[in-house]
Image (cartoon, rainbow, N blue to C red; front, side, top):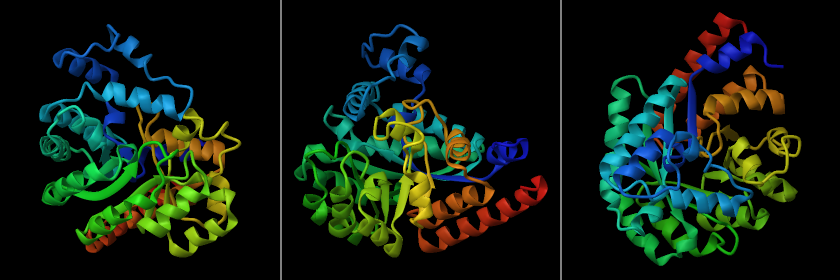
Length: 346
């Protein structure tokens, strides 16, 4: 049950989001404006028609729509606008810290300057933070379908842009036919550069994808990871190694990764003691927000205030901030949560 007190707690509680794609957060209004300015015909004349584009039957179709619409984002000022708007939105949701992914190959393949994109995004996030937006850092989410060779150049940009706020390295895209293991040398190099490591795995492909990510890549966080429940030994390994699953419930439902709310394995993952966080993934594409995902965790999975607080503090501890900053963030969040719980008696 979502009581009035718990509803207010969810709305006001400080939050952390770790699985969020910048391109997937663009609003229909901004997407239409960028498409017009950059000469891209979306086949839509107004915001309502743009919003109607965000529909798909499975994960493959979602990727196609995602890549198609990302073509509207071209220049540094485009990334700055997206980041500014997202930073403000996160701030309104009481998000204290977020790690936002950029999908570099979506843009490099069209001749976009990746450094300009990163610079623009971080400028936008900084502008938003100055007026109450969330503190945001960037993760480069390399599309595994492009193969390993182009990834080295992307990693070099990630290394160079660390002073501007790039804190992590990831692989995303379609797991089918693209296992994690070939990317092991890249992840070793990213680790040596001081970047945090994560991978999308166990969303569409089963336990083999997750085993590859945790064994070959040495990641500390999994994007999704929900298919881990197909292998009891894998569940034990995730729990014992403290690998955090960044779970995106509505995303899993709308891409067909799970057939229904009732079939979602999140309650079983939680009961097994695997650390997890709650995230929105691509809020525009999935018609959600982080706040709404917290509500749905209560409604569909029986979360209570304790569970929500645990997810927030787990996210703080799993972030790619330096250790001292991570610890400070967790302490601050814990104090805020305690005070708010006392005020609302939840």
